[in-house]
Length: 235
Image (cartoon, rainbow, N blue to C red; front, side, top):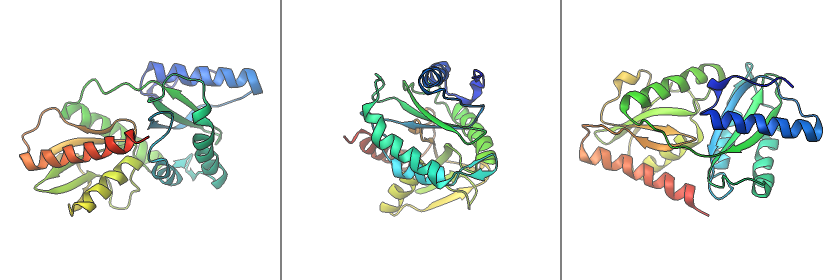
């Protein structure tokens, strides 16, 4: 099996090593073969489980690989593999990141890596991450990370009006609705004002470190972050 060297598809070197180790182990056991990755999903774990799994699977069903939606069998395999096999895995990253890798031929594998918080949470860095995720959405149909803001009591996502949101973003949208907070979308990141934050399937809710937002808007972002953490930490 050829070693995948698409480092840009992984969050860090440790993630790529975990993926390559997984492939090597599978190859030794059952002649497992995985070609060049076409899609890599990173879902945060908690106590060897994936919170919001159903949300992630719904978003996965809207993703495209090589221009085609995933098959029902693939979606069923992904959900069952997480539910049935993850808890039995022999790994130390109980609260790490589960990586689902689907190659250009539609084959899939899962592996687990350690979680590493974002080193740079400046507004500039969050905007850069969201731009990378937007490029991924252009190919797969769903962005794994979104730039968002709360301004004058309104939640705004940077996403096309008809685009399916990633799993974590659907949670934040629902939390806003429970508080009667209006939700809207814009196409241009520069249009965002107020309390800026990143919504990520891997990192959750990440507020920008610098902000001149109103205190009430910043408090709303803190409410979203707290809601996400409560759900993620639920055992």
